[in-house]
Image (cartoon, one colour):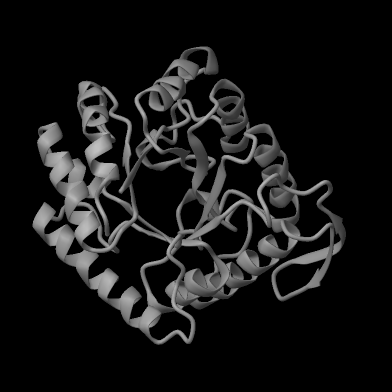
Length: 296
């Protein structure tokens, strides 16, 4: 079981550099940041751009994998985003993972003045986004004419460091998105298809239902998912109700029993959201060797 952390891009880099380096030094497998222009209750506070933050993290670390959790078509175009990702993969020396999602109807969906899409339209757009992004990252020149995107002689040269491209991880809580994750990506990420206000037990019940759906779809495939396929669970809904490192470890072990290969939780903050004790990170780091030995 691999354990990662989410670091919100809220601090000036001269301060935040220490936090990213500490995540690496403690032995976490991945460090992610959310890809938004403004986010929830923090919309009126400091919030820095995702790609520059990850570039700075790449140049300040050497081993920890870095990624978006998640980037979406709400504010990304595949052509320009692919160029950013190509460069970020180079600057990180091949440590980039790209988690992508369809996007919600929150602030980022409206800030560019685009018309509101129906759920089906968002799903259609996302499928096109993932397919085109994959092409742009695996070939030097791409032309595309779709319902939502156009690419004319789009160049991605010299291309990413990773071969054939940085791994894509698709966020999905429903069957259509799960099929996309299984056919177009190297991994799947979920938060359990639940909302705030549930007990930990209720949240885990929702996670179990989502896993059952994912496994049912996977069983219908002619070719099984590979042994290196990533199954990532954001356990923050459960961790937010925990009061000790032991309880967090129990949640991670539970995720392993459901077949997840990776989990991610937020770096604790002094206030909500993700209010918690930073000492958790030191205590959890001591458990990482045992957690890595878990087999899903």
